[in-house]
Amino acid sequence: MLRTEFIRNHTELVKKGLIKRNWTEERCGILQEVIALDDQRKKIQTSSDSVLHEMNVLSGKIGEMYKSGNREEAETLKTKVGQLKETSKDLESQLKEAKEKIEQKLFAIPNVPNSLVPAGKSEEDNEVYKDWESPLPKLGDGAMAHWELAEKYNLIDFKLGVKIAGSGFPLFRNKGSKLQRALINFFLDEASAAGYEEVVPPHLVNTASATATGNLPDKEGQMYVAERDELYLIPTAEVPVTNIFRDVILNESDFPQKLTAYTPCFRREAGSYGSDVKGLNRVHQFDKIEIVQISHPDESYKIQQEMLDHVEGLLQKLELPYRILRLCGGDLTFTSALTYDFEVYSAAQKKWLEVSSVSNFETYQSNRLKLRYKDSEGKKHLAHTLNGSALALARIIAAILENNQTEQGIKVPAVLVPYIGFDWIN
Image 1: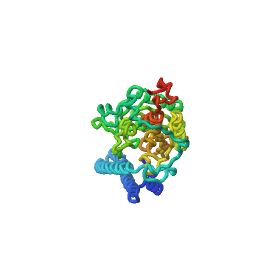
Image 2 (image 1 turned 45 degrees about the horizontal axis):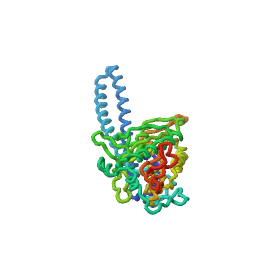
Image 3 (image 1 turned 90 degrees about the vertical axis):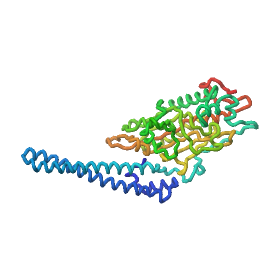
Image 4 (image 1 turned 30 degrees about the vertical axis):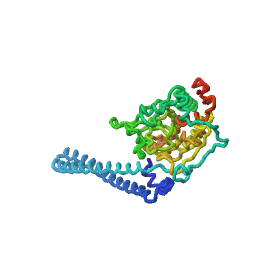
Protein backbone atom coordinates (compact mmCIF):
# COMPACT_ATOMS: atom_id res chain seq x y z
CA MET A 1 0.00 0.00 0.00
CA LEU A 2 1.02 3.61 -0.38
CA ARG A 3 2.56 5.39 2.59
CA THR A 4 0.57 8.19 4.17
CA GLU A 5 3.52 10.57 4.05
CA PHE A 6 3.95 9.82 0.32
CA ILE A 7 0.32 10.73 -0.32
CA ARG A 8 0.73 13.91 1.75
CA ASN A 9 3.96 15.00 0.05
CA HIS A 10 3.04 13.93 -3.50
CA THR A 11 -0.73 14.35 -3.62
CA GLU A 12 -0.86 15.57 -7.22
CA LEU A 13 1.44 12.81 -8.43
CA VAL A 14 -0.72 10.16 -6.78
CA LYS A 15 -3.88 11.79 -8.13
CA LYS A 16 -2.43 11.85 -11.65
CA GLY A 17 -1.61 8.14 -11.34
CA LEU A 18 -5.11 7.27 -10.14
CA ILE A 19 -6.64 9.20 -13.04
CA LYS A 20 -4.44 7.13 -15.38
CA ARG A 21 -6.18 4.14 -13.76
CA ASN A 22 -9.47 5.79 -14.78
CA TRP A 23 -10.40 7.10 -11.33
CA THR A 24 -12.68 10.14 -11.32
CA GLU A 25 -11.84 13.45 -9.62
CA GLU A 26 -14.51 12.67 -7.04
CA ARG A 27 -13.04 9.27 -6.27
CA CYS A 28 -9.60 10.82 -5.84
CA GLY A 29 -11.07 12.71 -2.87
CA ILE A 30 -9.99 9.71 -0.78
CA LEU A 31 -6.48 11.19 -0.80
CA GLN A 32 -7.62 14.23 1.18
CA GLU A 33 -9.59 11.93 3.47
CA VAL A 34 -6.39 10.04 4.26
CA ILE A 35 -4.53 13.29 4.96
CA ALA A 36 -7.35 14.55 7.22
CA LEU A 37 -7.42 11.27 9.15
CA ASP A 38 -3.66 11.41 9.52
CA ASP A 39 -3.91 14.97 10.87
CA GLN A 40 -6.39 13.68 13.42
CA ARG A 41 -4.07 10.80 14.30
CA LYS A 42 -1.18 13.19 14.85
CA LYS A 43 -3.26 15.31 17.24
CA ILE A 44 -4.28 12.27 19.23
CA GLN A 45 -0.68 11.06 19.27
CA THR A 46 0.50 14.46 20.55
CA SER A 47 -2.12 14.44 23.32
CA SER A 48 -1.21 10.88 24.24
CA ASP A 49 2.50 11.68 24.40
CA SER A 50 1.76 14.73 26.56
CA VAL A 51 -0.34 12.69 29.01
CA LEU A 52 2.30 9.96 29.25
CA HIS A 53 4.98 12.60 29.89
CA GLU A 54 2.90 14.19 32.66
CA MET A 55 2.27 10.77 34.22
CA ASN A 56 6.00 10.06 34.30
CA VAL A 57 6.80 13.44 35.87
CA LEU A 58 4.12 13.07 38.54
CA SER A 59 5.11 9.47 39.29
CA GLY A 60 8.64 10.69 40.01
CA LYS A 61 7.36 13.41 42.31
CA ILE A 62 5.12 10.96 44.23
CA GLY A 63 8.15 8.90 45.20
CA GLU A 64 10.02 11.96 46.37
CA MET A 65 7.02 13.19 48.45
CA TYR A 66 6.63 9.86 50.20
CA LYS A 67 10.31 9.95 51.08
CA SER A 68 10.05 13.53 52.44
CA GLY A 69 6.92 12.73 54.47
CA ASN A 70 4.42 14.71 52.31
CA ARG A 71 2.03 11.78 52.26
CA GLU A 72 -1.18 13.81 51.76
CA GLU A 73 0.19 15.65 48.74
CA ALA A 74 1.56 12.40 47.39
CA GLU A 75 -1.90 10.80 47.62
CA THR A 76 -3.40 13.78 45.76
CA LEU A 77 -0.88 13.36 42.95
CA LYS A 78 -1.51 9.63 42.97
CA THR A 79 -5.20 10.27 42.36
CA LYS A 80 -4.31 12.59 39.48
CA VAL A 81 -2.03 9.95 37.97
CA GLY A 82 -4.93 7.50 38.13
CA GLN A 83 -7.11 9.96 36.23
CA LEU A 84 -4.35 10.46 33.66
CA LYS A 85 -4.12 6.69 33.19
CA GLU A 86 -7.79 6.59 32.26
CA THR A 87 -7.25 9.48 29.85
CA SER A 88 -4.25 7.65 28.38
CA LYS A 89 -6.30 4.49 27.83
CA ASP A 90 -9.00 6.51 26.08
CA LEU A 91 -6.43 8.22 23.86
CA GLU A 92 -4.80 4.86 23.01
CA SER A 93 -8.21 3.56 21.96
CA GLN A 94 -8.78 6.66 19.81
CA LEU A 95 -5.32 6.27 18.30
CA LYS A 96 -5.94 2.63 17.42
CA GLU A 97 -9.26 3.53 15.80
CA ALA A 98 -7.66 6.36 13.81
CA LYS A 99 -4.89 4.06 12.53
CA GLU A 100 -7.43 1.42 11.49
CA LYS A 101 -9.47 4.01 9.59
CA ILE A 102 -6.34 5.19 7.76
CA GLU A 103 -5.34 1.62 6.93
CA GLN A 104 -8.77 0.83 5.49
CA LYS A 105 -8.53 3.92 3.28
CA LEU A 106 -5.01 2.98 2.16
CA PHE A 107 -6.18 -0.54 1.31
CA ALA A 108 -8.62 1.02 -1.16
CA ILE A 109 -5.93 2.98 -3.03
CA PRO A 110 -3.98 1.12 -5.76
CA ASN A 111 -0.34 1.60 -6.62
CA VAL A 112 0.77 4.64 -8.60
CA PRO A 113 1.53 3.63 -12.20
CA ASN A 114 5.01 4.17 -13.54
CA SER A 115 5.35 6.95 -16.12
CA LEU A 116 5.83 4.27 -18.81
CA VAL A 117 2.30 2.94 -18.26
CA PRO A 118 0.11 4.05 -21.20
CA ALA A 119 -3.30 5.56 -20.64
CA GLY A 120 -6.25 3.32 -21.43
CA LYS A 121 -9.45 1.84 -20.06
CA SER A 122 -9.12 -1.89 -20.74
CA GLU A 123 -6.98 -4.62 -22.28
CA GLU A 124 -7.97 -3.27 -25.67
CA ASP A 125 -5.72 -0.28 -24.96
CA ASN A 126 -2.61 -2.23 -23.96
CA GLU A 127 0.53 -1.26 -25.86
CA VAL A 128 2.42 -3.77 -27.98
CA TYR A 129 5.93 -3.50 -26.52
CA LYS A 130 7.42 -6.18 -28.76
CA ASP A 131 5.55 -7.80 -31.62
CA TRP A 132 6.05 -11.14 -33.36
CA GLU A 133 7.72 -10.20 -36.65
CA SER A 134 7.69 -13.56 -38.45
CA PRO A 135 4.54 -14.92 -40.12
CA LEU A 136 2.15 -16.49 -37.64
CA PRO A 137 1.69 -20.26 -38.01
CA LYS A 138 -1.22 -21.39 -40.16
CA LEU A 139 -2.84 -24.78 -39.92
CA GLY A 140 -4.46 -26.68 -42.72
CA ASP A 141 -7.99 -27.98 -43.02
CA GLY A 142 -9.03 -30.26 -40.19
CA ALA A 143 -6.84 -28.54 -37.60
CA MET A 144 -8.14 -29.09 -34.08
CA ALA A 145 -8.34 -26.91 -30.98
CA HIS A 146 -6.36 -28.20 -27.99
CA TRP A 147 -9.43 -29.59 -26.22
CA GLU A 148 -10.16 -31.74 -29.29
CA LEU A 149 -6.54 -32.86 -29.50
CA ALA A 150 -6.57 -33.65 -25.78
CA GLU A 151 -9.53 -35.97 -26.31
CA LYS A 152 -8.10 -37.54 -29.48
CA TYR A 153 -4.79 -38.45 -27.85
CA ASN A 154 -6.15 -39.07 -24.34
CA LEU A 155 -4.08 -36.26 -22.81
CA ILE A 156 -6.62 -34.36 -20.72
CA ASP A 157 -10.02 -35.50 -19.47
CA PHE A 158 -12.14 -32.41 -18.97
CA LYS A 159 -15.34 -34.39 -18.30
CA LEU A 160 -13.72 -36.46 -15.57
CA GLY A 161 -12.37 -33.27 -14.03
CA VAL A 162 -15.93 -31.94 -13.86
CA LYS A 163 -17.06 -35.16 -12.18
CA ILE A 164 -14.32 -35.00 -9.55
CA ALA A 165 -14.28 -31.26 -8.81
CA GLY A 166 -16.28 -29.19 -11.27
CA SER A 167 -15.79 -27.11 -14.40
CA GLY A 168 -12.33 -25.62 -14.71
CA PHE A 169 -10.45 -28.49 -13.02
CA PRO A 170 -8.87 -30.54 -15.85
CA LEU A 171 -7.46 -34.01 -15.24
CA PHE A 172 -4.20 -34.64 -17.09
CA ARG A 173 -3.29 -38.20 -17.95
CA ASN A 174 -0.85 -40.34 -19.93
CA LYS A 175 1.38 -38.24 -22.19
CA GLY A 176 -0.54 -35.13 -21.13
CA SER A 177 0.72 -35.66 -17.58
CA LYS A 178 4.26 -36.27 -18.84
CA LEU A 179 4.15 -33.07 -20.90
CA GLN A 180 3.04 -31.16 -17.80
CA ARG A 181 5.88 -32.62 -15.72
CA ALA A 182 8.44 -32.00 -18.47
CA LEU A 183 7.49 -28.33 -18.64
CA ILE A 184 7.68 -27.95 -14.85
CA ASN A 185 11.17 -29.46 -14.71
CA PHE A 186 12.35 -27.46 -17.73
CA PHE A 187 11.15 -24.16 -16.28
CA LEU A 188 12.64 -24.89 -12.85
CA ASP A 189 16.00 -25.89 -14.34
CA GLU A 190 16.07 -22.71 -16.40
CA ALA A 191 15.28 -20.61 -13.32
CA SER A 192 18.00 -22.36 -11.30
CA ALA A 193 20.51 -21.75 -14.11
CA ALA A 194 19.56 -18.05 -13.97
CA GLY A 195 20.45 -17.91 -10.27
CA TYR A 196 17.04 -18.35 -8.65
CA GLU A 197 16.87 -20.37 -5.44
CA GLU A 198 14.19 -23.05 -5.70
CA VAL A 199 11.73 -23.28 -2.82
CA VAL A 200 8.63 -25.38 -2.16
CA PRO A 201 6.19 -23.11 -0.30
CA PRO A 202 2.84 -23.88 1.37
CA HIS A 203 -0.13 -23.93 -1.00
CA LEU A 204 -2.35 -22.20 1.55
CA VAL A 205 -1.64 -18.92 3.31
CA ASN A 206 -3.05 -17.08 6.30
CA THR A 207 -4.76 -13.70 6.32
CA ALA A 208 -1.57 -11.80 7.19
CA SER A 209 0.27 -13.25 4.19
CA ALA A 210 -2.56 -12.60 1.72
CA THR A 211 -2.91 -9.04 3.03
CA ALA A 212 0.83 -8.37 2.83
CA THR A 213 0.99 -9.04 -0.93
CA GLY A 214 -2.21 -7.11 -1.66
CA ASN A 215 -4.44 -10.13 -2.34
CA LEU A 216 -6.65 -9.07 0.57
CA PRO A 217 -8.99 -7.33 0.62
CA ASP A 218 -10.07 -9.59 -2.28
CA LYS A 219 -11.83 -6.94 -4.33
CA GLU A 220 -12.62 -9.25 -7.26
CA GLY A 221 -13.57 -12.34 -5.25
CA GLN A 222 -10.95 -14.52 -6.94
CA MET A 223 -9.52 -16.44 -3.98
CA TYR A 224 -10.74 -19.78 -2.67
CA VAL A 225 -11.21 -19.65 1.09
CA ALA A 226 -11.00 -22.40 3.72
CA GLU A 227 -13.23 -20.42 6.08
CA ARG A 228 -13.10 -22.75 9.07
CA ASP A 229 -9.32 -22.42 9.30
CA GLU A 230 -9.11 -18.84 7.92
CA LEU A 231 -6.73 -19.96 5.18
CA TYR A 232 -6.62 -19.09 1.49
CA LEU A 233 -5.62 -21.30 -1.46
CA ILE A 234 -2.85 -19.47 -3.25
CA PRO A 235 -3.69 -17.78 -6.59
CA THR A 236 0.04 -17.79 -7.38
CA ALA A 237 3.32 -18.75 -5.68
CA GLU A 238 4.05 -15.03 -5.47
CA VAL A 239 2.03 -14.89 -2.25
CA PRO A 240 3.88 -17.42 -0.08
CA VAL A 241 7.30 -16.76 -1.65
CA THR A 242 7.16 -12.98 -1.19
CA ASN A 243 5.99 -13.49 2.39
CA ILE A 244 9.30 -15.19 3.16
CA PHE A 245 10.50 -11.61 3.54
CA ARG A 246 7.65 -10.29 5.69
CA ASP A 247 9.01 -8.34 8.70
CA VAL A 248 12.57 -8.81 7.44
CA ILE A 249 15.37 -6.22 7.41
CA LEU A 250 18.01 -6.86 4.73
CA ASN A 251 21.41 -5.32 4.14
CA GLU A 252 22.26 -3.68 0.83
CA SER A 253 24.74 -6.50 0.22
CA ASP A 254 21.84 -9.00 0.35
CA PHE A 255 20.36 -7.74 -2.94
CA PRO A 256 19.07 -9.12 -5.14
CA GLN A 257 17.10 -11.93 -3.54
CA LYS A 258 16.02 -14.37 -6.29
CA LEU A 259 13.58 -17.21 -5.65
CA THR A 260 11.55 -19.56 -7.83
CA ALA A 261 8.78 -22.01 -6.98
CA TYR A 262 6.50 -24.47 -8.69
CA THR A 263 2.97 -24.63 -7.26
CA PRO A 264 -0.56 -25.35 -8.35
CA CYS A 265 -2.56 -22.11 -8.44
CA PHE A 266 -6.23 -21.67 -7.61
CA ARG A 267 -8.48 -18.90 -8.94
CA ARG A 268 -12.24 -18.66 -8.94
CA GLU A 269 -12.20 -16.69 -12.22
CA ALA A 270 -15.54 -15.16 -11.26
CA GLY A 271 -17.39 -13.59 -14.18
CA SER A 272 -15.58 -15.55 -16.89
CA TYR A 273 -17.71 -17.02 -19.64
CA GLY A 274 -17.92 -17.82 -23.35
CA SER A 275 -15.20 -19.13 -25.66
CA ASP A 276 -12.46 -17.66 -23.47
CA VAL A 277 -13.08 -20.34 -20.83
CA LYS A 278 -13.07 -23.35 -23.16
CA GLY A 279 -10.51 -26.10 -22.57
CA LEU A 280 -7.36 -24.75 -20.90
CA ASN A 281 -8.02 -21.13 -21.84
CA ARG A 282 -9.25 -20.26 -18.35
CA VAL A 283 -9.27 -22.80 -15.52
CA HIS A 284 -9.68 -22.74 -11.74
CA GLN A 285 -6.58 -24.85 -11.05
CA PHE A 286 -3.37 -24.67 -13.05
CA ASP A 287 0.35 -25.20 -12.52
CA LYS A 288 2.84 -22.38 -12.68
CA ILE A 289 6.49 -21.63 -12.04
CA GLU A 290 6.95 -18.22 -10.43
CA ILE A 291 10.08 -16.11 -10.22
CA VAL A 292 10.34 -13.49 -7.46
CA GLN A 293 12.99 -10.88 -6.82
CA ILE A 294 13.58 -8.50 -3.92
CA SER A 295 15.74 -5.63 -5.05
CA HIS A 296 17.31 -2.30 -4.19
CA PRO A 297 15.03 0.50 -5.45
CA ASP A 298 17.75 1.80 -7.77
CA GLU A 299 17.99 -1.57 -9.54
CA SER A 300 14.38 -2.76 -9.79
CA TYR A 301 13.60 -1.63 -13.34
CA LYS A 302 16.86 -3.06 -14.63
CA ILE A 303 15.92 -6.31 -12.89
CA GLN A 304 12.44 -6.23 -14.40
CA GLN A 305 14.06 -6.13 -17.84
CA GLU A 306 16.24 -9.11 -16.88
CA MET A 307 13.10 -11.00 -15.86
CA LEU A 308 11.49 -10.13 -19.20
CA ASP A 309 14.55 -11.50 -20.99
CA HIS A 310 14.33 -14.71 -18.95
CA VAL A 311 10.68 -15.33 -19.85
CA GLU A 312 11.32 -14.43 -23.49
CA GLY A 313 14.15 -16.98 -23.58
CA LEU A 314 11.79 -19.73 -22.39
CA LEU A 315 9.31 -19.03 -25.17
CA GLN A 316 12.09 -18.92 -27.76
CA LYS A 317 13.37 -22.33 -26.63
CA LEU A 318 9.84 -23.72 -26.85
CA GLU A 319 9.63 -22.26 -30.39
CA LEU A 320 6.31 -20.60 -29.69
CA PRO A 321 5.27 -17.36 -31.41
CA TYR A 322 4.86 -14.64 -28.79
CA ARG A 323 4.43 -10.96 -28.24
CA ILE A 324 4.94 -8.67 -25.23
CA LEU A 325 2.37 -6.11 -24.11
CA ARG A 326 2.82 -3.18 -21.76
CA LEU A 327 -0.39 -2.93 -19.75
CA CYS A 328 -2.34 0.32 -19.76
CA GLY A 329 -3.62 2.04 -16.63
CA GLY A 330 -7.06 0.48 -16.92
CA ASP A 331 -5.70 -3.09 -17.15
CA LEU A 332 -2.93 -2.74 -14.59
CA THR A 333 -3.32 -4.91 -11.48
CA PHE A 334 -4.13 -3.16 -8.21
CA THR A 335 -0.67 -3.58 -6.71
CA SER A 336 1.55 -3.13 -9.77
CA ALA A 337 3.44 -0.03 -10.89
CA LEU A 338 4.41 -1.51 -14.27
CA THR A 339 3.43 -4.84 -15.84
CA TYR A 340 4.38 -6.58 -19.07
CA ASP A 341 2.27 -9.48 -20.34
CA PHE A 342 3.54 -12.25 -22.61
CA GLU A 343 1.07 -13.81 -25.02
CA VAL A 344 1.55 -16.87 -27.22
CA TYR A 345 -0.32 -17.39 -30.44
CA SER A 346 -2.86 -20.18 -30.64
CA ALA A 347 -2.92 -21.24 -34.27
CA ALA A 348 -6.09 -23.35 -34.07
CA GLN A 349 -8.06 -20.71 -32.19
CA LYS A 350 -6.38 -17.86 -34.11
CA LYS A 351 -5.99 -15.80 -30.95
CA TRP A 352 -3.35 -14.67 -28.48
CA LEU A 353 -3.27 -16.32 -25.03
CA GLU A 354 -1.68 -14.67 -22.00
CA VAL A 355 0.96 -16.93 -20.40
CA SER A 356 2.98 -14.59 -18.20
CA SER A 357 2.91 -11.29 -16.35
CA VAL A 358 6.13 -9.65 -15.15
CA SER A 359 5.46 -6.88 -12.64
CA ASN A 360 7.34 -4.31 -10.59
CA PHE A 361 5.47 -3.35 -7.41
CA GLU A 362 8.09 -0.86 -6.23
CA THR A 363 7.40 -0.33 -2.48
CA TYR A 364 3.65 -1.08 -2.58
CA GLN A 365 4.00 -4.65 -1.29
CA SER A 366 7.07 -4.04 0.86
CA ASN A 367 5.21 -1.36 2.82
CA ARG A 368 2.59 -3.95 3.79
CA LEU A 369 5.25 -6.60 4.28
CA LYS A 370 7.40 -4.27 6.41
CA LEU A 371 10.26 -5.42 4.20
CA ARG A 372 13.16 -3.03 4.62
CA TYR A 373 16.89 -2.79 4.13
CA LYS A 374 19.69 -0.88 5.85
CA ASP A 375 21.88 1.46 3.82
CA SER A 376 25.58 2.07 4.52
CA GLU A 377 24.66 4.60 7.21
CA GLY A 378 22.29 2.21 8.94
CA LYS A 379 19.13 4.01 7.78
CA LYS A 380 16.16 1.82 6.91
CA HIS A 381 14.31 2.00 3.59
CA LEU A 382 11.61 -0.04 1.85
CA ALA A 383 12.83 -2.57 -0.71
CA HIS A 384 11.25 -3.17 -4.13
CA THR A 385 9.45 -6.42 -4.99
CA LEU A 386 9.00 -7.99 -8.43
CA ASN A 387 7.55 -11.21 -9.77
CA GLY A 388 6.81 -12.99 -12.99
CA SER A 389 5.27 -16.16 -14.39
CA ALA A 390 7.99 -18.33 -15.90
CA LEU A 391 5.67 -19.82 -16.98
CA ALA A 392 1.97 -20.65 -16.48
CA LEU A 393 1.48 -24.13 -17.93
CA ALA A 394 -2.16 -24.39 -19.00
CA ARG A 395 -2.06 -22.09 -22.00
CA ILE A 396 1.51 -23.08 -22.86
CA ILE A 397 0.27 -26.64 -23.22
CA ALA A 398 -2.69 -25.42 -25.29
CA ALA A 399 -0.33 -23.58 -27.66
CA ILE A 400 2.11 -26.51 -27.93
CA LEU A 401 -0.68 -28.95 -28.79
CA GLU A 402 -2.33 -26.66 -31.34
CA ASN A 403 0.74 -25.18 -33.04
CA ASN A 404 2.67 -28.46 -33.30
CA GLN A 405 -0.12 -30.70 -34.62
CA THR A 406 0.58 -32.59 -37.85
CA GLU A 407 -0.93 -35.53 -39.68
CA GLN A 408 1.56 -37.79 -37.84
CA GLY A 409 0.65 -36.44 -34.42
CA ILE A 410 1.90 -33.64 -32.18
CA LYS A 411 5.60 -32.79 -32.42
CA VAL A 412 7.22 -32.30 -28.99
CA PRO A 413 9.44 -29.17 -28.78
CA ALA A 414 13.07 -30.30 -29.02
CA VAL A 415 14.02 -28.68 -25.71
CA LEU A 416 11.50 -30.88 -23.89
CA VAL A 417 12.52 -34.23 -25.42
CA PRO A 418 15.26 -34.92 -22.81
CA TYR A 419 12.65 -34.33 -20.09
CA ILE A 420 9.74 -36.19 -21.63
CA GLY A 421 11.51 -39.13 -23.31
CA PHE A 422 9.72 -39.08 -26.68
CA ASP A 423 9.51 -36.89 -29.82
CA TRP A 424 5.87 -37.32 -30.72
CA ILE A 425 2.47 -37.52 -29.13
CA ASN A 426 0.41 -39.88 -31.28
